[in-house]
Image 1 (tube, protein in one colour):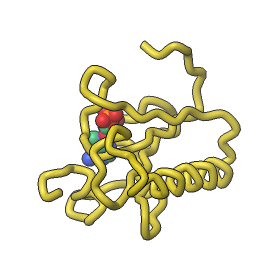
Image 2: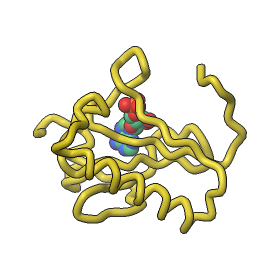
Image 3: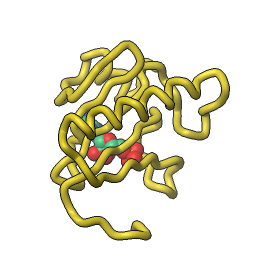
Image 4: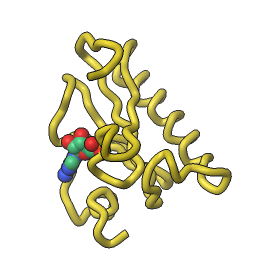
Length: 112
Ligand code: AMP
C-alpha cells in the first residue's frame, strides 16, 4: 500500500535497521525498543493484521514464525516474547501485520 509505513520500509523508501530479509518477510529493529532486543518481523505482502490472516496467506505467517525461531537461535535468545497487536485498543499503531520479538529483560504477565 502506497501510504503504509512498513511497506515503505520494506521498499527501502524509509531507512531501517535491517535484521533479516528473504522473499517473504523483512525484519528490522524497532525504532522505540521496549527491551534490549526488540525487532519486528513483517510480511512483504501487505496484510493489515492477524485479523486478515486466512487460508490464502497463512503460509506467510508460518514462515515468519520459522524465521523468528531461526533468528532467536542465531542470537542466542533462550527466552523471548512474540507479540502482535490487533486493533487500536490492543495497541496497534501500524496497520501492516507485524510480530514484535522482545528479549533481554524480565517481563511480566499479564501485560499492562
Ligand atoms: P504496534 O504499535 O504494535 O502497531 O507496533 C508498531 C511498532 O512500530 C512500534 O513499536 C513502533 O515503535 C515501531 N515503529 C514505528 N515507526 C518505525 C520505524 N520507522 N522504524 C522502526 N520501527 C518503527
